[in-house]
Structure formats: C-alpha cells, structure tokens
Image (tube, rainbow, N blue to C red; front, side):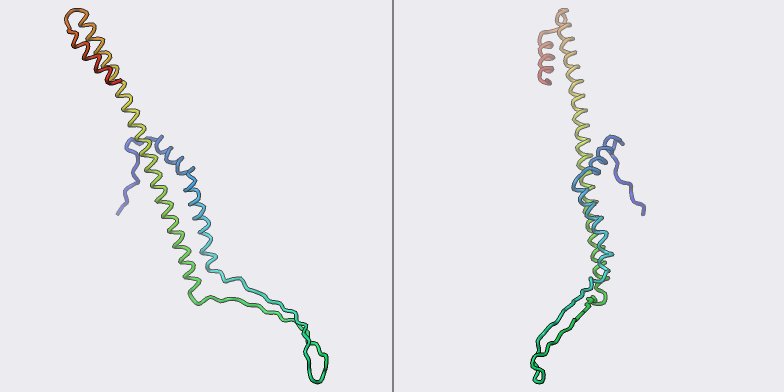
Length: 176
C-alpha cells in the first residue's frame, strides 16, 4: 500500500514552507535532540566492546622471622592482569538496548518536528486569515462610506430621506 504524501499547505504557499523549515532548523530543542541522537549512535559500537583490562603491581619488602635465620627479609614484585568477560550474549543484549534507545530518540524527534510543523503552519494560516479579514473589513468600510456619501447626495437632491443618510452613517460608524 502506497503512503499518502505529507499534507502540504492548502494554498501551496512557499512562504509557509519556508517558515516551517526555518523553525525546524533553528529550534534549540530539536538541535539538542539531534545531538543526542548523534551521541547515542556511538553507543552500540561501545556496547560490544569488552571492559578495559586492569593491571596490578605490588612491591613487597617484608621481614619474616624464621627459626633458623634470626633476621631474614622477604622481597619481591607481584604483577597481575585482569580482564572481565561478560556473560555470553550480554554484549549483544547491550547493543540491542542501545539501538532501541536510538529508535526512541528518533521517534521523539519526529514527534517534536511534527508538532512544530503544525504550530508554525497554524500560526501562518491564522495570520493569513486575519489579514484577509482586515482586507474584507476595509472593503466593507469603503462600501459603507460610499453608501453614506450616496445617501447624502440623494438626500441633498431632494429625492432621499434623512433616515437613509443616518442609517448609512450609523452602519459605517459601527464598522469602525
């Protein structure tokens, strides 16, 4: 089954897409999430590594009392190397867990990006709607002023009534 493409703005407005992209590129939360994903990408290879070996060095200089030798000394050096070996399958499990954490962080990033896309697009469309309403309001104002002027002209010619002039002026005033 083919997936439907992501919903684009209904008007295909390039400005909205540019605003959304700017918000996605400059959002500090998204930048932090992307950095977290990059850092988490290094963990699976580290999870397969063996723990660091340890080395112990001891210097001994002990006085040992022996029945035959009254003041014998025992001196020596002891060196030890230790390597922890994890239980079979533990490194594989740690790698799988690290990869799942990456998947979780990527899902969080996609969710945040989607939310920001929606917020920016909604705000842009709300601004566009308000601008359209302002334009319509201006057109109504001009029409009502024209109607008031026309009513005053008709009244001054003697063919109109004063009530028509007052109604047109009242409508224009209410709009303002």
